Amino acid sequence: MKDEQKQNILQTVRGTRDITGNLYYKKQGFYEHAQTIAEYYGFQPIETPIIEHQAVFLKGVGEHTDIAEKEMYSLETAGGDMLALRPEGTAGVMRAYIENGMGSMPQPVKMYYGGPYFRHERPQKGRYRQFYQFGLESMGSSNPILDAQMAHIGYLILQESGRKITLKVNTLGTIESRKKYLQELTAFYTKNAESISAKDQERVHTNPMRVLDSKEPETIAVNANAPVLSESLDDESQKHFQSVLSYLDDAKIPYVIDNKLVRGLDYYSHTVFEYFTETEDGTSLALGGGGRYDGLADMMGHNKSVPGVGLGLGVDRVLEISTETSYLASIQKTPRAFLIQQGAQAQMKSYKIIEALRGADIAITHGREKDGIGAQLGYAESLGIRYALIFGQNEADTDTVMVKDMLNRNQETIPLSELTHYLLHLSI
Ligand code: HAM
Image (tube, rainbow, N blue to C red):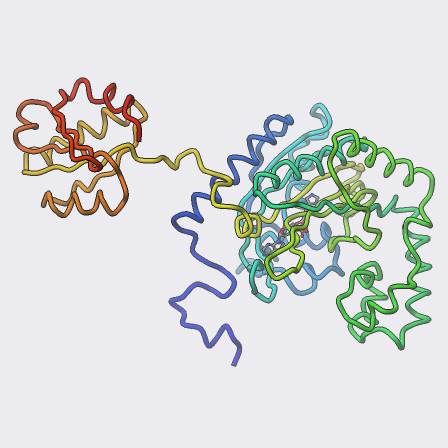
């Protein structure tokens, strides 16, 4: 019986989860922070559908990638359309660029996006079947300054996590110069076929570059002598990469050149990069990655090339490794007081206090459904809120409220009309 079938159908689907409480706030805070930086760099929002024609992704990410071969959630509609849940963001954004004629807008078109993505991978810590990304794409320019700027912006967003971030960069060169290299690489693996794993032997003929970052021990040993891509790149590729590196140097963004970094999607050419952080158990976790994809529009069958560069950040992973105080959401407010009401009339009128304070942007906590004063005081104390606003029959009649300092038990009666001013000047 399959793992999935053993599960209770009233539980979340394997690899998916409910996001509540602090995690929800943090996720929202992450998006706010990332969007704010993106806006400063001139990017604008786009939201593409979660479901697209399967061909968008098959052509976009490449038919011989892990995503297309085994990770995509595909479905056939009753009308016979083949659709898929988006496994990543770039192909859908390129589809939108082409479909909406964005080529006639001032170039490049710079867009940011986020939301859930779906890959049928083996779930484990930091790996989900429904996961969240924040992404940026710049479409319509081949200038290497944009590659560097992309890597730079991702680094800025991740820095807020409070963790040490390592940026790894590499170049895959132009599609032309890579062809020559792929022939060399295929010849090398064919010669060493006996010494690499069976799984990698298959990949040699479909996606030889993926064999380079194989995790199979026997392949890793062979890879030590594999031809190096950077050595067979043409002048244009070298020049592009050198420009990217000098822009990064100038912006003082630390990076490591990793000539084994190839990425798992077929659309890349020239620059590729990835961000890592070290986890408690000493392993390295990929927080995001991206690169240039000048051939993507052609792969998707568009009649015009659209040079582009982008990045995708793994939101679930970033939240997992970030510190308590990172990515605070602006809707999350520290309550300045706890409202306690007693009696039917006070309970009825208490919304007036809540509304007046909301108008002054003062957050308070309350339990309007509760009546007993003791229960409410106990609740306020358990939340660690210093001031209680006591609103009973007497106060409701006189339009006042009693402010009680729970620390020293002092209390003061304040007219409702002065309450916002009074609370704003209390130290909490
Ligand atoms: P990617 O490297 O496939 O790139 O995904 C980006 C990030 O998403 C990964 O580094 C990882 O943090 C996170 N991620 C991927 N799969 C999962 C998963 N199953 N569970 C949790 N997190 C995951 C892309 O998707 C490209 N579209 C990036 C890009 C944009 N390139 C150019 N433009």
